[in-house]
Amino acid sequence: MIQTYLRDQLDWDQPFKPEEYADRRRRVREALQAAGLDAIYITNPADLTWLTNYDMIWYHLTNLTGLLVRADRDEDVFFDGPSHTTIVSTTPEIRECVFTPYDRPQAEVIVEGIAARRLAAAKIGVQPWGYSPHATVSDDLRARLEAGGATVEDHSFLVEELRFVKSRAEIAVVRRTAAIADNAMEEARDAIAEGVMETELEGIIMASMMKSGGGYPGIRTMLGSGPRAGTHHSPPQHRRIRQGDLIFVDFCGCLHRYHVNVNRTFSLGEPDPRWTTLMDNSAGCVDAVTGGVKVGDPLSKVQEVADAYTDKVGLRDYVWFVGGYSLGIAMPPDWCGSHWVAPRENLGDRVITPGQVFNLENQFDVWEDWPGGSGAAWIDSFLVTENGLEVLSRLPRNLVVV
Image (cartoon, rainbow, N blue to C red; front, top):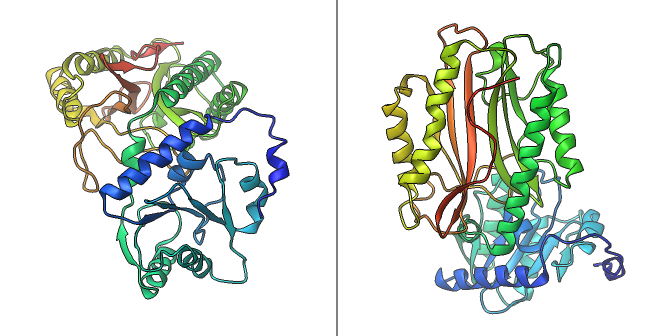
């Protein structure tokens, strides 16, 4: 059972006031009603955090931890293993919890709990697209629900659609997150020197964010120097930085699990001028987007403007990726939202709306043996306001010499 006495001992600030979480639950209930659902069983870790502030780090393959939200009343029920009793007890927005014993299939206990609330024959949404649990576990839950008389539908993105547009309280957190990211990037920049290992820079970044009250991002820092500068999706290695190297640094600031992405490329010493020209030309893409995209436009216009600018300045042959995706609450192993500025198969286009947060990447591979590296990049994150797209970082996008 929930150890309620622990809630009287909470002596640290919660990310949001209870009214914020109540409003989120209300919005989910309205979305359920609009979708013709009686309830949804939420297992996507980011959605659980958004609705309850549940912050747990072990979403293993068989984990069916989740939240039952019903359309007709504000009586959500959390399901979790007894080993997380203290986490649940120190999470005030979890108001009722069914602890699932480890000597029985978790899905069996969850279905019994749903049936006990007169939802055995209900129309229930589930989230097979979530990172947790494994498909076989999700399939087991679905089969047991259907065997009990329920109609089960895939509504993996129902909550994420709501999360895409942030509230005022969330926007305040996003701004703090952006400041944390910039400070960490500056500390990493100032530590770049000959002989410093890539892994040391990651340690500096993480220490900076932790000291600022931030947390671990959903993805490790991506960092490469010299011949590794164009690896993009690679963690730092034990390579020591050398004079003349380019240093690629990509991470998210993270606060209360909210993410703001920033990527910058530095040069230890004066770079080959071709790198400088490439980065100077690409840096103007942000101005093209902020000047060419407005509230009410389709999100895909960001991609259209960015592509047109990239072609205009003659960088297409070097493009590794120009594009972006939504940002917000995220849990490992990823921070990428499902809304892309170039819409993908799972979700279509969206209208640019105040409160949205997404990034824009300009990443390049150069395999022409330019001295210093194999690639360069920058990434910025945007907050949509009533006035348009606001760039959240204050750091220059050009190739910075250290």
